[in-house]
Length: 303
Image (tube, rainbow, N blue to C red):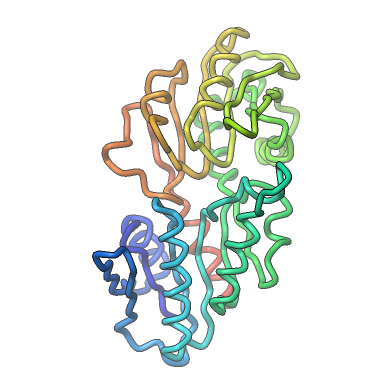
């Protein structure tokens, strides 16, 4: 087995390698003045199953191209099988046509990844349940919800004083799974939002359920942070005792860090699926690692 790390996310790379008791190798990446890229795998991979970690970080289009080049390089250098460890798939929210005349970017990205001859893929908390079904290769779909459940129990052991919250209707399934992980019967609130598909602006329309006790917002992605901050404000106005936010993928675009830092949430928890650069970190932020989830899946595949 060969584990190929991601130089843009060395912390996660090293943690996974350590749990696998495996050496991590890093590819050589060259970016030319015209932004074209060259990748090289300098280690012998002939006949070996290769696990390739790639955290998709901005610019995402360039990162996707780099991923496909790396898969191609591993295949051309004799790898027996290439399994992609790609926690965050870009364009997950662009999985269908919203307005006439649009493309479906997620379908294109998936095609690019598959056409590079990736054999299998490990992903974490895709935006919708149908995304794994869009692949024609085996998908190992992991979730950070178990990490979130553990942290929620640490914050508030009395689950009668816990309310789990979805910031939109699309997260209802996520709440059901989290409720099961917490033991069942946990109070739930679902916030309904309206999105303008031309401007991208979102506003909270209403919510379902009773806001009470300590509230834990759970989502898959934080991008600009505007949706989650509106959800935080809604809970605060509704009388929440304390508010915490959990999200798997910290995209943190635009001024998301500033919005979250100044929000009424007591703590923001994300995972290391995407590295958070120092300039986007803030006092309320805590990063949970998905290294155990990924290493356990790899060990299962190696059995």
